[in-house]
Amino acid sequence: LRPAAQLATARKNGPGTVAADFSYVTRDGRRQTLHGAPAARRTLLLFYDPSCEHCEEEIAALRDNDMLGMLVSGGALRVLAVCAEEDRALWERTKSDLPADWTVAYDVSGILQKELYVLPAMPTIYVLDSDNTVVLKDPRMDVLYGWIADEASGL
Image (cartoon, rainbow, N blue to C red):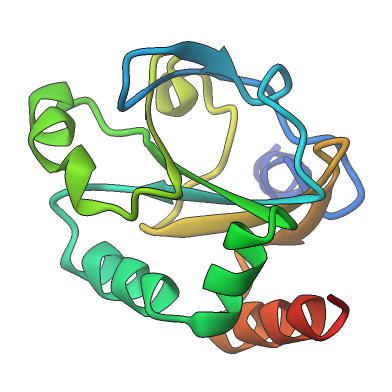
């Protein structure tokens, strides 16, 4: 049973599958779903914890990445940063710390409780196509930056 459960976990939201839908509230109070949000050519889906120092470091590196900024400002990429932790008050206090051109959200559908996504460590990153098909699942940062560079060179 254990290997079967591990395999199911590994396949959850894997590359080539449609990412699980979930509901969230944006920092400006709008309620949306992943699948119902305005379509983008690509979405960088970032699950984070506002109290996580490693998250802060990775978010700062992404925020300072010029190629990522070019993709976001050009409309080729949407960054959806979702707090899936239970401390909404902390999210409320910190949501404005993330870049203004990112969609910053708080999970209201119980991603962790329903195990919609496997979030072994924070941050956990997915890259999705316009139809929410997973392109990259929790890539190493060097792989993600290579992907960003490839996307930026295609503009």
